[in-house]
Image (cartoon, rainbow, N blue to C red; front, side, top):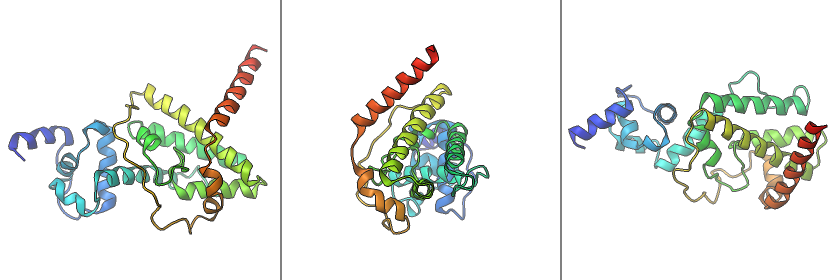
Length: 237
């Protein structure tokens, strides 16, 4: 890398933050901060390495590829939900309170990370039936556990999951776009065929995998459109 190239990268990445003791979590958090400051299109392994005070190639020991880096950044950002005291993994006060807290927690994540949220919304999942913005198997399993405990049948729980995720995705993408987030896709690699470690730790997701894999987009669109028209009619009345 030439001196001029290093200077150009330094202008984007900022001063080196740390030269020793790198680990995967540190790299992912630095990547998340970089995207939030400079945008996804500016992110490269070389620039991220410059921010951390190392050569970009040294990052590959912890993140094998840029795709792995982006997937890891999504995981790190969604991990913020686990530290949110207002969000519960289990429905302590009923399913409606559980969903309200989860939705509001995801909105806080989106507003805190508006440049990263489109990545969460568009990043290809490891399985096509994992919908954004709930890119966490742990949260999806928690979702179905909460609704199942409240008496929802499997088909009703899956329909609720689709409606919930569609509402959140549409609303939050509009909200972060209004804050200047770049919601245009940058690159769309092929989704991976299998989830590392399988689904053994997520019994509800494993049980509902076939239902979640069904493509009911047209039906969902018509149902959502009908609900929207009813809501608009209520406004007139």
